[in-house]
Length: 288
Image 1 (cartoon, rainbow, N blue to C red):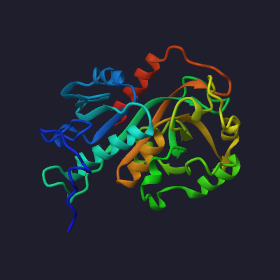
Image 2 (spheres, one colour):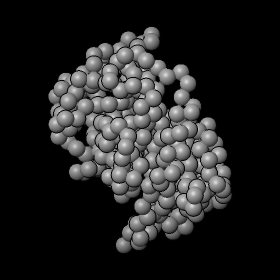
Image 3 (tube, helix red, strand yellow):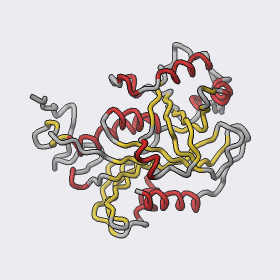
Image 4 (tube, helix red, strand yellow):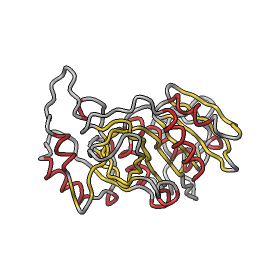
């Protein structure tokens, strides 16, 4: 018999909505676009033909509607893998837990989860304005270390990455999980493919030194030089690894597509990228 999940483990709002997202199961579409920036939800939902749901709790905003006959939810996650941990767990609960009985449903509902974001390139030849579809997400955060993720991680890549970078035992053990081949074929087929690394922050963990002195000042250079079986690390951001880790573990289809707005090697930065981001969002909507 399946266990009943206690209220303390899966809290709900007074009206029965899931606690952080403030959503009811029927308000969530199978096709989900995830964005870090809450303002980007309004931009994408303005492209939808109809909107049936507008919900917000803190920085988590959801708009659900239809685009060319396809039902789509657009959700802001805020920044970081810790927020992805909250959002992915609650999205899966909306899909696969009966919130009235708090028991897992007999039939598994699969969600298509596409993160659209911005990122910094780690290879000099990747021009700003390029779109990267992440084939693999390499996490140097610690979110997945609290889960029994079993054999979904590419430990051969992890081991070689740790050897190459002289990975410190003081840092979380990396993990590496793949994108959904289904969504890669449907959405990212003509985009630059890459191994994307996800950091737990924007400054120190991504090698940016402002006033606080870095403990591992050579790490970015080592990441840039990493190669394994033809793979190199194309870009760095803050959400992909947890999306892929939890998405795979929970049986969903995850994909991250990022607009490159900076190149960390050449120092280039794209000052204005609104039109390029709008074009990318429209492309994802059309291909869902």
